[in-house]
Image (tube, rainbow, N blue to C red):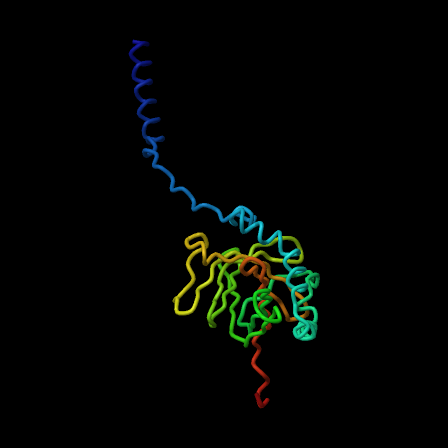
Length: 218
């Protein structure tokens, strides 16, 4: 009799436990998170492009040394904008529209320097990174900005030329790949410094395009 009672109790406890704790559903494979964007620009840049950025101080020296006498006073008139060591802290430009013009050190041209007209550039947000793009002109670089110390941002991107509708992605077309640095040189004035060719240097001045106050003649 006692054995029968114990058996019935065991069956009852089993039923209660089965009702109280249903079997969990079969496990499903979790979706893998998207790969994180590297926070170090050297994880993105190709070795030869990292070398171009590391070599910018020497390129500045060579570019200025190659100026003809007819261009030296013109270059000096731009002040800190064309001074190699003029970078200030807080190099990140705010998002918005900028007037930008290219100042080109070109040792293969007479005088070694040429200033171009102003166009428009845009600084925007792309997730955790900032983008910089030139909207018009014959060559239009576009890319992302990566932090590198307290006095410069590293630019990694590509350039669209002439009638090309948009620049390719960095790494897709070797001749379009473009790297450089963004620096702040004065209040409300930045520059994008790009190695050009074997020994040249492009300096894009960036100034916020702020509309004049109402009633002000343009």
